[in-house]
Length: 43
Image (cartoon, rainbow, N blue to C red; front, side, top):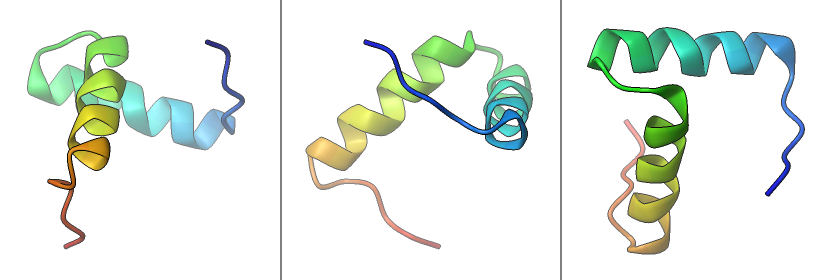
């Protein structure tokens, strides 16, 4: 899969993944999975 993101969004994803101690691809996969399972909740 290819997806286009702004540099700002990509940088934020990588920063958050680093904070969580995981590769950024794993973080993106986890977010998509939670969204599709109806478990992603807005703050």
